[in-house]
Length: 431
Image (tube, rainbow, N blue to C red; front, side):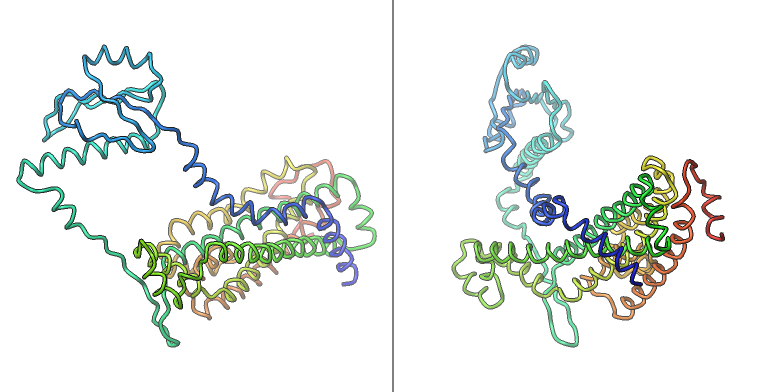
């Protein structure tokens, strides 16, 4: 045990002293936040104003196209061929041609452009034409479009959980987002730190450093120390991210006065707000965030992160010991990563729709998929016995995979110049 502890210390101290670790620890929360914020910001600032010429031979859409911040419309007249030739001499985005239409079957509308337009612009134009044609049909039928629009009503349902301890506001979007973030972080961390183990083993094997170390410790002790040491690095980085994120969240909350949407101040906020509907929606989101069981989510996240990492990390270490360079790892990486990738895909398509269904239950019990599946289910509420059973299976799975990995590791770590096959790896288990 003393030798394993020495290896853990070495792996931990070497990695936390690296500049890359310090930089990523400081920038990690900002980078994760930028993944969500930057696309929205780019979408709002990068789009220039498009100019579209409208050649309307039907005369039905004279007032339909109105300029906005994104698009400017210029009505043109004349023959189509003349306007197509003139369009090529301009810097305009597109030319919309509307022939004389049969409103019961509007066909022949065409959009000319010098380059391919985005689907958003096409859908925008189709929506304008569709709405105007519907308005004309309503008038012909004696129906007032404005009256019909006033009859349309938006309905939103506030969901509340009824439990023995009382009622709690719930929000499907918030619980889904919380589960997805937890599952995504575990998926990402397992890959990042698992690959670190594999590369570390390959590097030591290539440099022949491992031969010196093996003379003092057993292969299993070396593998266990390396896996636990890197797990401690990941846990340290994660805890530091929680602290930094808490500081950033506190600053942002105070800057934008998020607490005015809390239960205690929502009545006051609704009276002063110009848009009570949005204030109410924000209140529902804040209430749902307050009602999340954060201690349970954080403790389970740490457990499933460590359990999933140890399970997959042992296999990554075994792969690293069996090859001489990183290129040869591809043939063994695929079978290992398939359960992890599959669980992430199924989590987004099946589990997120029915977090209490049979697929979600069994995937949260299987050790290879439970770290992601269970993290996605937890915000929706999972019975305690299912959580404990899933944790038990994950521990048993980790012990089993560690035993397999250690059998491969003790043979492969001293084998050079040969690419092993799956059949040879299976034989190593019984040496």
